[in-house]
Image 1: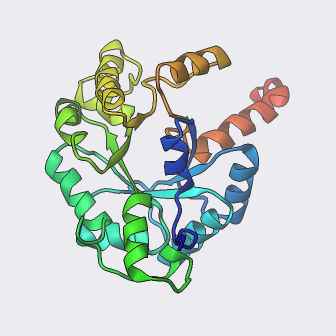
Image 2: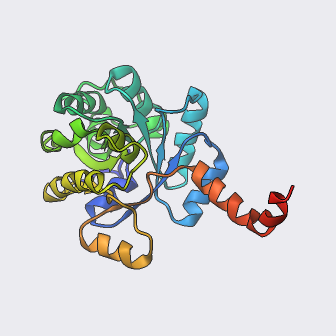
Image 3: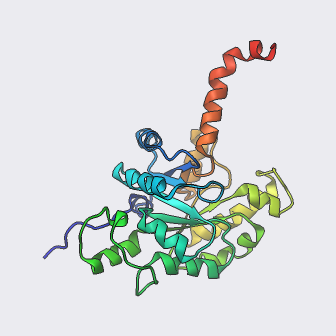
Length: 269
């Protein structure tokens, strides 16, 4: 007999497996229905919720994760440390992926996988709530499907992380790599110079390793036009969109552009 439809799906991982581009939208503070709806309408298919530099209310975050999934988006959340109280609870709240900020050591990656995956692959505790859309189902099948569906992302943002990229990406559960170029530049002695040639080369070193292992990655520098995007796609880049910029940036850009016609008068007063 054919098995019933999946108890849990991750559209982001399905896109990556098919070789397609994953369009990410990075959210800092705005855990609102409007952000989800507009991101989905615009064509994004993944939300990366920042959880390092901001503080979220647990109930609000859970509501946001569930609503994102209801609207066809794959939500992932960043964590600072790969420990059970943070990792497992976010997945139980509805996150489909975990992004480890400041990934530097292979032991961190192993710990993250340990708390993201159910036995026999890990030690995540079983609860069937928001993570399975509150549906009753066969626990064994759910655990098996969830281990495949949850997405493990590493955020490399230090020279130590670059040095250990090969060892970290050797972990079989790593699905994707993103960068924190601001912090990476700082650890390399180039504070604020995110596109310094040495910083770009460091990211490209990691990208080369990731592509060789079939792991999705974002570009060192995001495309500035359609042709650059197409060139990056041909080179194997799969993570695009706004993984690196927040809703702050979109609001600021839009506000500045809308105000530009008034700028001369405003500067006179």
